[in-house]
Length: 136
Image (cartoon, rainbow, N blue to C red; front, top):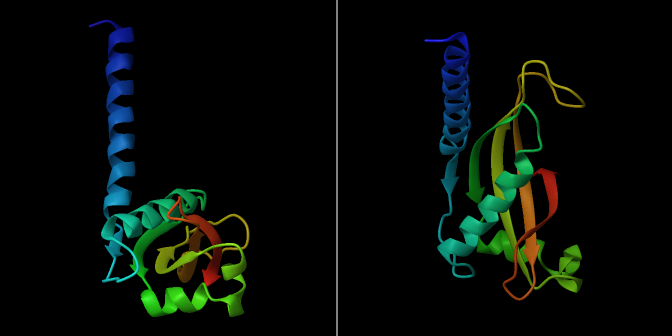
């Protein structure tokens, strides 16, 4: 086998390992949609996907869990008192836990477990938008 073929095979194997490891990290996230009288399972899964897309930007962090905070908390967060009702007609809140890298960049504490809440909102059943996140 020529050296070019060997390099090609190694490159394909490395790409395969990389893709498998990325999928494994996503598969290890514990998601609890609880029960909701406001939203269907599909609507809550769409919200989870929105959070996961945003979370991907938190380089080096590992997402462990996402849990729907419940209808009562979501209604309270989306109330006029909290200001969301002026711009959105639906709100969903999720709790999360994630771990920071051992050598983080920016303001993260190294090798630490964080718990954050994610607040999502939308109008007329359209796509969820993250309107807030951070310590819950």
